[in-house]
Image 1 (cartoon, one colour):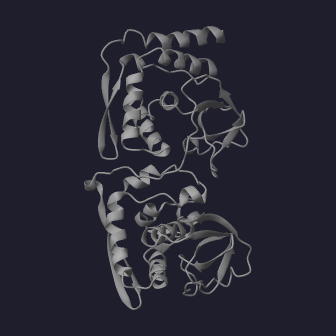
Image 2 (cartoon, helix red, strand yellow):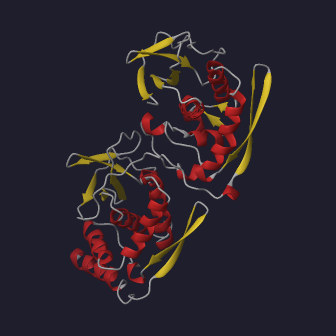
Image 3 (tube, rainbow, N blue to C red):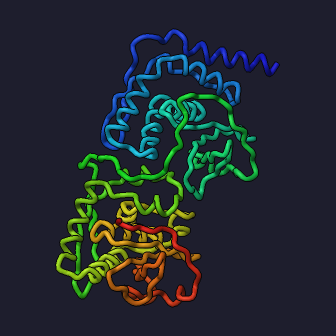
Length: 398
């Protein structure tokens, strides 16, 4: 009986994709201020009103693979290449396209199937799995260190979960999942979470935020342009390693409204005093709150997110300070990781105060997070002086 019901459901899927050949429709995808016209063949509109199973997923793929999908993929990839989108940003485009084809709230499995199909046909090695409770899980091959999302290993490859956030109440530890084996020739590439370029947001989408702090008995004000869409991009971004995290840049409008002003402020200062100025800006232009109280979990914010948010913690300030020193002075730096804290040490021509030796070089600690006492360059919080640490990231301009 179950087999007959399955066959009928598969016929239902197949029948609703037949008779739609001909001129492709155009779906309009709003991508952070830019509208992209994506051709979409009516024959690709495939019904999927059955519980996810290996059989129906394979059937969905076989039907979709036989239709005219190439014009859709070509448009997406052309946009990716033209705007040099990193994989994570491109995935946001895939998500928005799938949302236009099959709204997430109306049919979550169907929406997920389209994401999976489009990502694979774009060249990425992505898999689906079904949990013991019947949830449809979406994984992608990624070789990087990702710390707060489930993963599984297959053929010596790491597959990380792209839709964990949609299953807040699912215990991945207690519920097994079973990968769906579908061979998709185009799906070869590993996915990267590295974000080295932000989208070209529309200037009209920015708002002005006033940042101020006091340094050497003088008040400094910066009117920084910020864009709430940055938060959207990183809403479900996982905890990545410090090499990836510290190198997320600012968008062009935000950069132009902040970095030239900081360079002007430190222009007549000696280098160490200028770094001290940037250190105090990072400490005092924002309010402190740890991630557990702020978000309920560990969350590393990019420098632009720190500028956007009212509160930030030591990870966020370390990343912002690192970015500012890199852009203003481009000095060698290391990220120093303690069990409950992270800070930055900078290599000057002449070391100052407490130094950390790494690979034969001396780095002066520069604490970008407010402490119980006002620390200068080369001063370490007493609570950290005798604590073990590791070097989480090294930056060398050369």
